Structures are given as C-alpha cells and as structure tokens.
Image (cartoon, rainbow, N blue to C red; front, side):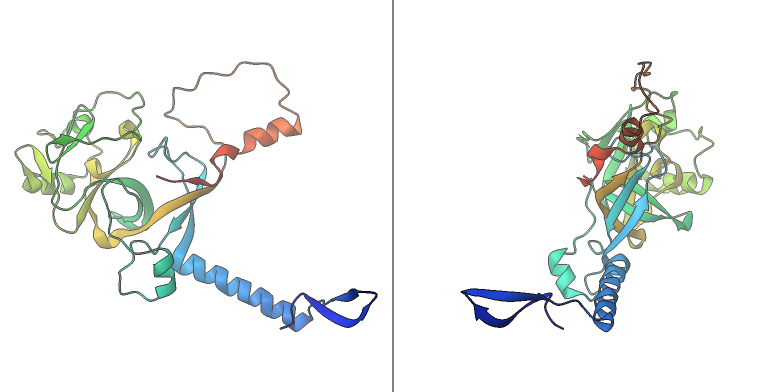
Length: 265
C-alpha cells in the first residue's frame, strides 16, 4: 500500500514536487476493514462499554456515567493475546477494586460494586463501618446518604432476620459462615458493597460472588450524561433566574463534562 504522500518528479530550483496520492477504492476498503477488525477485537477481548443505571456506587460512579472496562485484567492467565497481556497484565482480584461481575442470582445481568472481602477475610460491619480482620477499613470513597435505620444493613452479620430484601437462601448460608460475629469469606468467593452504602443492594442482601463471575474492572468514564439522583440530598435546590432556553445553557446541562476521561478508582 502506498504512503499518503509520495516524493515524485525531478528537482526544480532546489524544490521537490509533492504529489498527493488518493487511495483507490480497494485501498480505502482494506483500511476500513482493518479499522473494524481492530475495533471488534478490542471490544471482544479487551474493552466493553457500560452505562451506570443506579445510585449504588455514588459518588465514585454516577447515574448516567458511561464506562469503558478492562476485560483482560482478571482473565485467566492461560488465555492468548500475549501482547495485550504485556500491555494490560493479568492480576488477581484485590480488596478495594471496583469490579464488574455477573449477578449470582441472574447471570445475564452485570453489576458493578467494590470488593470489600476477599477469601479468608473475617468481616463485620458495625454502625455502617466495615471491619476486616479486626481493623476498621479505610474507605474514603464511601458515601452515607440519609436513610432509615436498618439493623441488618448497618450491623452485619445480624443475629435476627428482619429485612425482607434479604434473600432467604443467603440468610441460611450466612449462619454457617459466621463465627464469633464475623463473616468468614470462603475460598473462591468475594464480598461486594456499593460505595453509596445506605442505598446499595449488595452482598449484605444476596450473598457472595464466585471468582469466575468477576469479568472486568472499570478503566475510565468516557462520557457522562446529567441525570438526577434519587438519593443525593446534599444538592441544594437551584432557584436562580437564568436563560434555560439558550443553547449554551442546555449544552452545559446535558453532560457532566468534567467527568469525561475520569479514571475510575
């Protein structure tokens, strides 16, 4: 394939004539095909877009955030694509990771939560604060939006089954995993919580996530549409007079421009 520009002709007064080479139809088709193949490869094996639909990960992830996730980072080490593995090396799931996984109760659904307990951890929650192996977990990312008291949510594992949102099968399983008031995370399982701790449907209610169900880690927010949150009451009502019909105002309000290309932690 020829380069976009070629040096041609004889020198004239110390100058060379440049002739622009326009690609032929087959060349343009081959270039487009290569682009499509690369894009499909990346979306199939490396990256995948997701939209955040709920408030459970506020304020790390907001309703309307569009994510690109890395599907290779947690892939089995024996998978092919060695070049990609050098660029995005494989590693195991770690406490504190934000991960995408198949919902154990409905494998066709994907959820995004933060890993709080890994295999072997002794975990408990007291007054909403997570303790792992006897030490309070530092969680600067957590938000505690106002909510009605819930003994099962705020003090886990609870001794009494009081929350109708808790899966009965998980409640029964939890009894065998609880020792001295702590949940002992079994081998190959992970305990997930949402960062919006008082408004998250997570492992407290439906149980542990198997290692094979964890499929990706969010990389970056590539776009964010402004959408209201039903749990964020910290925002003051805006009663200022303005020009809402102006195009510039509508464009500013359409998206959260400052969140675009924000790396997820």
